[in-house]
Length: 158
View (cartoon, rainbow, N blue to C red):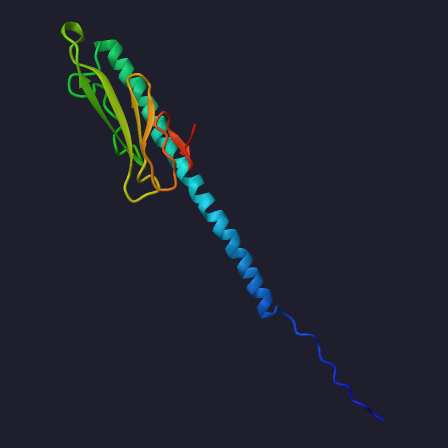
């Protein structure tokens, strides 16, 4: 007697439930990793402001040593050109005071402002002739600190 047994091979592949679980796990990991990565990239771009403000302060102090003032038209040393900066624009304003040999600008405030439309938009850092560093504005989610340059969300400073 010949009996024919039908043997069914198990289906190869994944069930819909298994695929949904994998997609859910990937979505959870992406929801955590992407904001952290975005903050990491933003922090790397902030260094342009820190480095250029510090270098500009050195230029201003060298100018002061040569001229005994910070300039007669706002700031004596030229600010870094916007063509050399990618994420920030640096400006300088002076404070006029003094007479005689010290006439001219005896104080200044250099400001780095984040370019609009990028990750640095909303950031404003300053430094003055007394080397007072400050963060005057930050985007939402970053805590402001008035006595240092903020480099992390929550207002932490370098």
